[in-house]
Amino acid sequence: MIERWQLASAQLRSDDAEGVPQCYIRALTGMETTMRIIAAALGLCVLTGCTGINMKQARSGAPVQSVTSQKPAQKIAQCVQFSWQDEAMFGVMTDASTEASDGGYTVFTPAATYFADIRPRGAGSVVSFYAREQGEVATRRLASLATCL
Image 1 (cartoon, rainbow, N blue to C red):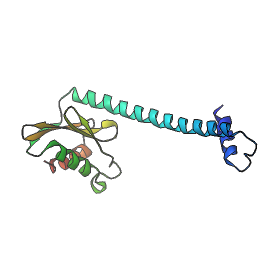
Image 2: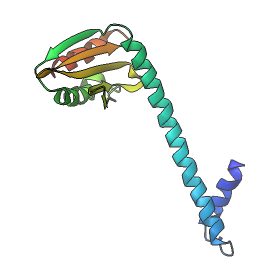
Image 3: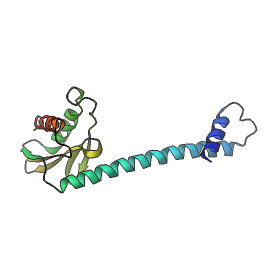
Image 4: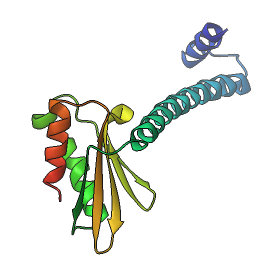
């Protein structure tokens, strides 16, 4: 069924669409756009859901390290995200995102393999680093985070 409407939609975009009611052309084009939006939304939901579950599981245990800083949480979060995107230090694993959470920020890598919770505390911040995988990359991420304190 999907192949039929895709084929019809492709044919309607060609010059041979004469005689076809415009409402049919609009319906097919709208359906194609809607399908793309739905697919993108589902993909985003799956990725976000997996990340949330991974972070929740990691938070149930102790962080690899917790440190304090005199800097504001927002500045630290921006610095950590930027430093975790350093291709020279992390190679192809440079994706890092930041989201506001629980009055502070969480900076995380894909699938929340590594993440840092940054929360305001007094005039400064407290940073908790979590790593679901230990090793050289975790050590580099922690060292990179330390430069932001």
